[in-house]
Image (cartoon, rainbow, N blue to C red):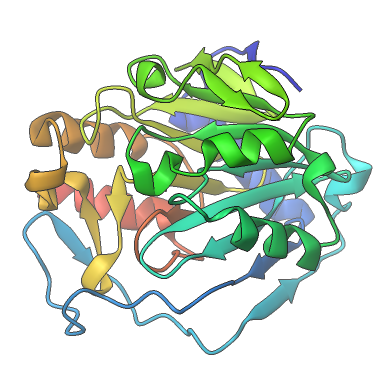
Length: 282
């Protein structure tokens, strides 16, 4: 499915949409974890400047499924997605899937295609189901396997923010040369809203499934050390820390429960409230 233009959705519209979904009952979410467990950098959970303390994550469960009376994603085209985490230890990629098709958000470091394939197999899919590959930013721990993934997923289109696309493509793979497609605010890929979140890199993007209440942040935020942090907490890896903080404030204007971060543990409930608290402290 290729990108399409959609009207920008305000926080109030998203809240109204989410309230309606909660009234009906949320669609089931599946969580699949692969690879070594990701641990905090210092193991202490110490709150850093520009961070919000999080409750400890339960890392002992490898598969958790919640179902409700709401129609499943497969019965509602363009409806809410299920998600799977490809945990490579220090970095994670994510698979958002429904109706037998999937979007891969980030590709991990070079050589991570085997981890991604294993995650696809566990949710009953293969590379042929991957129709969209969305790269949040240019750094090699997120875009390092994009060439291998492009070759293995022949039905996929590759998407990235305009400011980072020069570092990601053209992509030469077994399937030939593929040009990444530039996306930004008001674009939609696989029914997912693209949000420009520059700062960590100039072309950084985040991905929102408004129907499911899922935000994939790339490195716009992380939960290293047991806290929710802006990319500005790691200024040595962030191109423009002030702009990174502004992107966190922008993300606080949307509604979601789940936050899927590139580094650290996902937040599985109360995500929007956590980001609002972080934004208020920046």
